[in-house]
Amino acid sequence: MALAQDLVTPAAPGNGIVPEKVRDGIDLEINGEHYRHTGDPQMPLLWYLRDVLRLTGTKYARETGADLVLLNGKAVSAIAQPMVKLAGKSVITVEGLAANDGGLHPVQQAFIDEDAIGCGYCTPGWLIAAVDLLKRKPRPTDDDLDQLPNLCRCGCQTRVRRAIKRVAAGKVGPA
Ligand code: FES
Image (cartoon, rainbow, N blue to C red):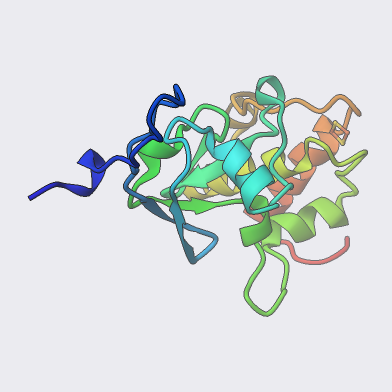
């Protein structure tokens, strides 16, 4: 019996078109919802998020950490993840940080409270990195903050660090 991946669409004789194999879907969870990707298995996760799902919070800027997402709870580059490696995995993007009732994640609130947002391009990556860091190290040191892969071209680093420390200190709401 033929397997699904062995089935091919017959080409019209003599048209020169090489038929593509029928692909198995890649099932994964994004922000708590199930998705099946049936396109190019090498498509980077970033393209799937932005171009297919229209989740445009995650940005194309690997060198600044703006493309970070949580993959099974760990911050990783969405550009560096081909869809084929994501079967059965769980992805959280910046759009998935808030609670179902719309309440902001404590890290999001702290960024607002500390005015840690300039143009906002880098902000999704910082938020994801901060959530990951605070989960691993609830009381991060300056050295821990120095290790974050993110950059802010608007110069918000100092305020971002204050925001992360604010969450670590359990402070909620404006100072
Ligand atoms: S807020 Fe503009 S790059 Fe960081």
